[in-house]
Image 1 (spheres, helix red, strand yellow):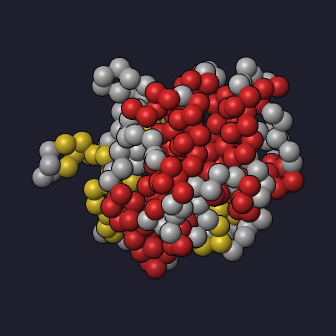
Image 2 (cartoon, rainbow, N blue to C red):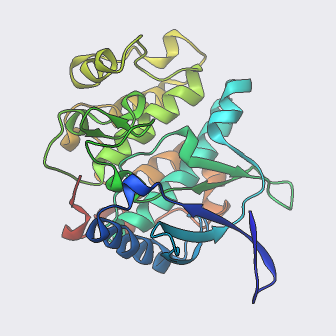
Length: 281
């Protein structure tokens, strides 16, 4: 926690670990990605104010200080209702749509990277997606939740193509991860759970997720949406986040007027991300 001297407002400062900043060109790629995401100026993406190198050589960036809790913490207390899940998923999809438009793929979308901010007017919590591009910094020498062997991501929410350590993934990997998050919100756990990371990775690649309605009261329409997001073949998922937003709006028309903006039009949904959205993992 810090205070911006010139703006006189609180901020959050993140210092990257020395092992993640050992490669200046890699960090520069992250800085460039931070610039791209910041250029979106989307209310569902955490705002980055500045970034640079500290005197000891570590890279850092300064971002808005958020008040609230992570989705992971919320889920540790209770399973969410389908109405709550629909609103939160719409907010996350809106943020992904904005990022994918500028060629940025998150690659490590999970409940820990979704922050819930109370709405000042008493409306449903607003979602803020955190840590765009952080996963790209991880390499074989890294350790921690984002790293499993040489894979980049978190096994519980990892797309099959990412689990195979494919040389490149596109925006549809984020949609799969969002499907895992939706399943978790509805059921109380991710679609695949096992004792070891290797087991989970194998299940992501070859396992078939049980319909969420077997574990919780879920409508057929929501179940179909979640299972489509969890398709192993990226081409069988929603084409892009805009198309997903339309499907969520069909489940709850009130989302047309919801924060952080109106639902996309049919034309928006048909306009997939640019070719730049295919980013090497």
